[in-house]
Structure formats: C-alpha cells, structure tokens
Amino acid sequence: MKNAGRMVQGAGCGGRRTERRPAPGTPHPAPGPRPPAPGPRHPAPCSICGKTPVTFVRYSGAHLCREHFVDFVRRKVSRELRRQVRLPDGATVAVAVSGGKDSMVALRILHDLLGPRRGIRLVAITVDEGIRGYRPPALKVVARHCRETGIEHRVVSFREAFDLTMDSTRRCWGAATPCTYCGVLRRHCLNRAAREMGADVLATGLNLDDTAQSILMNICRGDVERLARLGPHERVREGLVRRIQPLRQVTDKESFLYATLMGYPVHHSVCPYAADAMRNRFRELVASLEDSSPGTRFCILNSHDALRPSLEEMFPPARLERCPGCGEPSAEGHCAACRLARALKRGAGCRVPGAGNDEGSGTGARRRSAP
Ligand code: SF4
Ligand SMILES: [Zn+2]
Ligand SMILES: [Zn+2]
Image 1: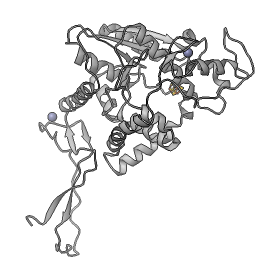
Image 2 (image 1 turned 90 degrees about the vertical axis):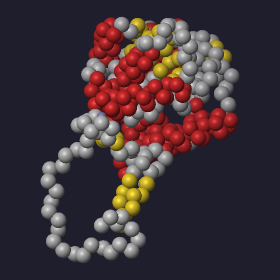
Image 3 (image 1 turned 180 degrees about the vertical axis):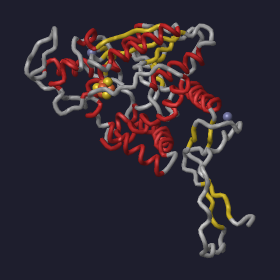
C-alpha cells in the first residue's frame, strides 16, 4: 500500500540511517503462510554510479564502487588537511611511517595531493624501536617503497637516541605497559628528526578508530589534561614540530581497504608487545559501540572537538623550555623521554649496552610530558 510507512531519519551525529516504520493505525499483517525465502542476495549497486560496489559504508548507508570509494577517502583526507593546516609553497611535510597500513595510506595520499604543488617537499621518517622480528621487516618495506616512489626517507632509532632498545629493556618495564615507554620515546625521536629535516608539520597515520579509542581511554583514566592535548596541533610552539592527523576521519576498515585496493606494500605483523597494551580493551569497546550504533566513532570525535576549546582553557599549554639532557622541548626540567630512558637504564636486571646496570624503577610513565 502506498504511503503505508514513513521514512524515519535515525541519524546520530555521524550516521544517517533510514528505517521503515508503520504509519500510525496501520494494522499488523494478518497471520498466514510465510513469504517465500529470499533468493541469493546481490549487493546493491554503487550509490553514485551503479557499478559493482567494493564496500558498504554503514554509517552513511552508501554502497561504493572502487573508483568512488577511493575518491571518498581522498576527499576526506584532503578536507581534513585543509582544515588542519595551511601549507605555504616551499613547506616541508614529514610523515611518520611505520610500514603499517595507516601510515602508508597517509604517506601516499599526501604524496598524491601535495606532489603537484610547487615546492612542497615530502619526507618519511621511521622509528626503529629495537624490536627483533617486528621492526626490521617493516623498515625494509618502507625503505623500498620510498626508493621506488622517490620519497626521501630517514630512519631514527632508540639505540642511537637513548642507547637502549625495547627488547633490551623488557625486564625493566615494571607495572607499566611497554607502549607507555615506547610512545614517549618515539614521539621524541619523531619530533627531533622532523625538526632536523626542516619540517613545518609532522603527519601521523592516526585514524578515526585510534582517535576515538584515545579519547575514551583518557576519559576512563580521568586524564583530562591529556584529553586537552589530544588531536592535531592548532598552533606552532617553540621546538615542537606541529603535528597533523590527515586520516582523522578515515576508519580503520577504510584505511585497510584503501591500502589493499591501491596495492600498497604493507607490513601486517603485530608488535610482540602489543598484547599488553591497554588500548586493546578500548579497541574492542569502540568496535562494539560502533557495531550496535553506527556513527558512534564520529560522535566521540565530534564531542571531543566541541569540548576542546574549554579543555584548553582549563589546561593552557605549559611554557616550554629546553631539556638540559637532550635539548628537546620540555615542560619542566628534563623531558619525559630523558626521564623514562634514565629509569629504564637503571631498572633492576636491565642490561643496556653502553649503559650502567644500577638498581631502580622502570615506571613513572604518568609524569607530565611535553605535548
Ligand atoms: S605496540 Fe607498543 S611497544 Fe609495540 S611498537 Fe607500538 S607502541 Fe611500541
Ligand atoms: Zn561508483
Ligand atoms: Zn630530554
């Protein structure tokens, strides 16, 4: 019957869902024989051109063919890039590339978007944390890919910067998860390398899922100050290369599909220390919320964006000094990386080549760090 139902927009802040509800007063269908079972299901055609789709974007309800999916992701990245930073001619853009799908997608989309622009220089930086069996093959993938695409590539290592490796300090981590150390030391290495290479901005491959997880993690820890500092940098601060996140609106699945469709070489193995990461629990939580309510990740991101100005007022950025140990920016005295590296080298049972083997604690990860 025509007009027996009405279309209901059930969209949250990120998704637009349409469902059919009976109009008021419509009787329930009379009980009777069941309708025949549906035949084999054919995916709906691309919502834009009608060709065979490669994916269904659940939070928007769109089916997309290869061409329109690629265009959809690139547009999102391009919009986000314009929103986050204005790049003058002659700018240098550094990209942190681990060899995983997200950083590879970020590197290649930036290469495609910025390549035609006059005078923009793109450089890739990879951090070698010293994790046997995991980092060396990823390094090879990135190095080969950069050679083939003509992108300048630099590798920086924990050994070179701190005279330690993640493997050599594993007995010194104490109650903290390895990622707590690794994250601080890696940010330090990336900032230093990007600044030395003359970069105006440093792009990371953080995607929408990562961002939503980080926001929830900091809320659940009650770490409001860190919540204020999450997200792309909005201003330039002395000694800190401004960080941008071009994949902020791209989901994990979209990043994977994009890398696969474009045939990028990606290093898929998982870090042997990742099992201990607190993030794993939040990954499951965000995935389950998104599954039951498509668009939730965008809602989390949008809520954080709306709260951020107030959070920044509550926690204005600290004045940065130079760390007396390494010269990197620091909010107070020795920077977080120097303090952690020193604690790791002093850890009980910790044997770091070229360093002492004093008694001490490997924890202390929650101290204030430079943004
Ligand atoms: S999973 Fe953790 S320990 Fe492994 S590379 Fe990532 S941050 Fe470092
Ligand atoms: Zn299409
Ligand atoms: Zn330092």
